[in-house]
Length: 466
Image 1 (tube, rainbow, N blue to C red):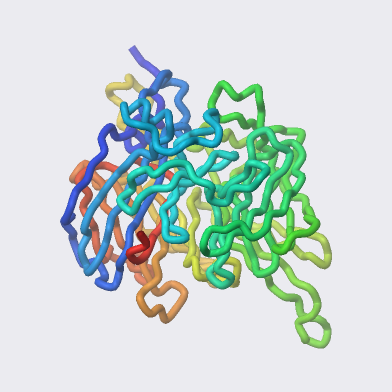
Image 2 (cartoon, helix red, strand yellow; image 1 turned 90 degrees about the vertical axis):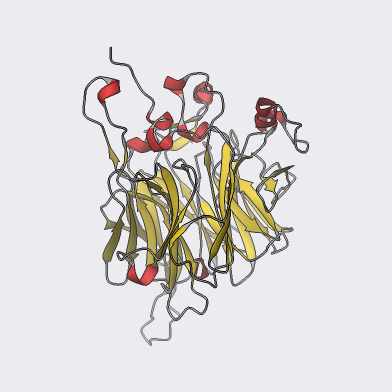
């Protein structure tokens, strides 16, 4: 008898069932000795699935996986559920902290960052971040980026390394407004701007430049009729797409129409000045923004069904136009860059190739696990070329995070770190690639004792940062 299997509960998506702590991890190769910090990654890891056939990947409780690196050694690996009230109750443990809203006390499963001396697990939609200890234990829900209107720091908050500000573009389920929230480097909210966005579109990510914040309005909108699915969004064919340009210090948004699509994530954005007839550089500017674009009709409840690509939009603020172009046709997601270039002209971007391969037809017991093609990509946006590091069909690679070298001599002088499933061990490695020899052999493979399920976003958090 053939049965239906949920791809997000099998293969390398399958959740793990135990929390593990391991010390002095074995390493193949050499970890650069100057690396001192933690590689952290968050992602859904559900407990107690009630309806496996209907389960949606993004609904699982957050689990953070971390590796502590120092002096050329991998000191520890830990994985810990983020203990919302529901998770703590399920595990039979005391609750951590007091939630602001019981209905929105959800275990953040999208991103984990180090900021202002603490560690935070982040999500979106008006759900509060959770603070974690250095060792990834849950402290409780917190007020990072909280505003009187009920918004807080969003999963894709962006740190500007020059102004030392943390920016969030926060939406709330069912609200026709979003807020641009700016925090100083101690986490205090400096400024907020409330922006009307009728129809409550799903605004997962945004971008920064020196003077502007870019907002992405799409046909994917909040739908109360879909609340029972757990992901209350749907594609509205009657709605277009547009990009908004907001001054960083607040003010009116200028909107520019686009081909209907959804921005999955942004790689980067920057301003490119026009030259006037005298060459003085005072003739206005373009804004260049590079995005992962999901095509028309994207079903947000089945992320594996989409075929997102790397696209560039060039916004001419003087002419009031947008030029859309494709940078790379390969299906990809989770774009990253050298974060020191956030909001400024840059050359290199990194992404994970995420094209789904399906198992052949036949009885379930005879089918191999389906999964994604397994490569990390390095884009040279100046030359228009792409280099791939292939890991093999039976591996599974997550988001690649760029970490700069100790004294970098170039934008790509550093490393790309990612969790990669090792089929020979049936467990995961933290792989460190040399960014300037991207398709060459890894510098190091840190061998974790367990499998890390495919997940969402992560960070390199340098230093002791306790």
